[in-house]
Length: 392
Image (cartoon, rainbow, N blue to C red; front, side, top):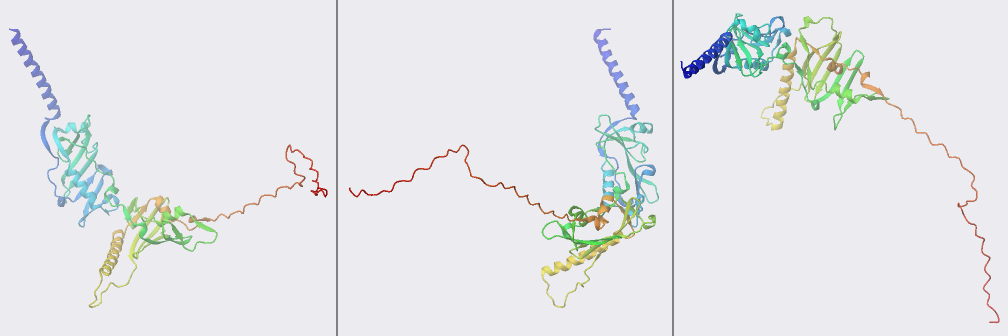
């Protein structure tokens, strides 16, 4: 056989070995194949979603549809934040794949796309409890460029363009803000504790605070007073409960914040152990009827003023309706200022000690002043009188 034929056979043999290796590799992956970028979940109607789980097992977040809205079962059935639910659905639908990696379930554990080992698991269910769809996010490839993902209920594992991130706490899916007011809109703050009550008001021209009826010999701790006065500029909760879940709490502290527009926020607070609980409501205190006389022509300013009053009244009612029936646990650093005692805001005025007068200097009797190294010059004799010579 010629050398040329032997060379051709060698090349063919090398190609066959390479092809066999590739086939073995594809077989172990379950037949990877390139497909154009596509979405993992092909269509999902949010109206079909009755419940959602995020995570796995006992630690999973349970979100359920109730009365036309979603609630977070892990957080006492507190209403879910629509924005967070929309983001959760959108992120699930936005998972984009590039190619199939394997369709064999025995490879799932190694790729960490089993629900027990997955980085994220999101599942959507129908009203009858059956699975609609979901996303299981596994580990990233060694190069870190792609992530292994699969659709819940499907054995096929895909490579995704990026690694989606899903929040994993129940509180992540609720609006934790209780109230947020602008400090410049606050007219007065009154704090009542078992030790007494006090009222703070804004100081004109600046961000200072005035303590009403400041006792003689006392001065206000400015920094703490500002924190008490502005406690509602951003008030959030750490946990939420229904009233029956909290026992043995005496709500013996009251924080009342009045705004310039006649809105009044009232917060009742109580402690149990190292936790502070809060219940709240709001009301619009201007009871003057919003009316219009027959044939009365109102200016644009008058119409805006009436509209502002109606909107403030509506806002207060919505606030009370939203928070009615809930007991919030607030962070301790914030609770400190909502329940600050009167005496903790005041301190004694330091009395000014009069400056001591310097002791009088010792006086030495004066002697003749002699200049150092002075030379005594004898006095000149008196000049003779200038008398004219009579014989001249």
